[in-house]
Length: 336
Ligand code: AHM
Ligand code: MG
Image (tube, rainbow, N blue to C red):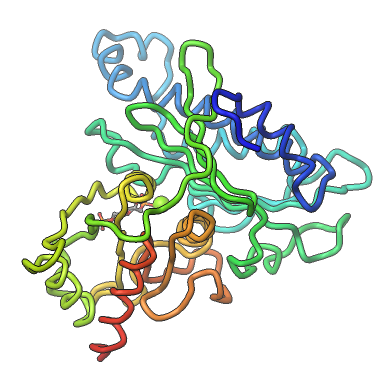
């Protein structure tokens, strides 16, 4: 039972027993993500400041080059997850291939693999706009005690045991699910603790916000063009409002709170859209469904797609259930 003002640490311990595999391993894993998120948050918040200090010559005295933040975030998440010896494999947007974690534990008992987008929307960093980390967790399918293989990562989204994101926004939040609803925790930066601030988050069934990069309009499939026109029509509660940050985590987070749809369709430029199935769409789709929303590729459920490649892309329609269903209706009717 979620209690307001509970810390994330307390929440994890209290809810461990309700999770179907209760070894404590998943709890330790989420704790590691919490730790890495705090470290990355600290660095993200200094973006810009480092430039100011740099201009005064201080970074040169240290002899350190400013590391790109997405590379920094990638290193921190991988380091934290491997140092604590709790996963058997990691896949990341920043790495071409998956990483086999060599457990120091002789019996090599780790059961979970993690897929991450360490800093999504990182083109927003330079302009002080919110970015996020996305994570997805599976139980391995190959035998425990052996090095992980590709098939441990290429599982359908419906097999996820946990997923979540961190949004580095006006405040920093960690939002996650273990398949029993979605809960959001806000970081109190003064003491470095996440508190449960948004228990049992739910997408409103309907919404009035549509989020899509309309700069790509002429390249979109006809169904998407027609749906966008529908959103703009003067009728009933329409026109809807257009809001697009260009940072999936932030657009999703806002839509979950206010009601809305996020779309990254395929286009004549990108046959499969832009977003990656394994560490962007699947975790967001799992969260959406757990929050009473919906996620689709325009025709079918995201979580049912059998992945074939680590970095494969997929068209993505996600958010308030009625809105996603309406977009699917247009996609079916005007499919070319
Ligand atoms: P990234 O992983 O390279 O940051 O790309 C993913 C991001 C999403 O967060 C965002 O919704 C989308 O790309 C924006 O793309 P575009 O600039 O094409 O609208
Ligand atoms: Mg990304």
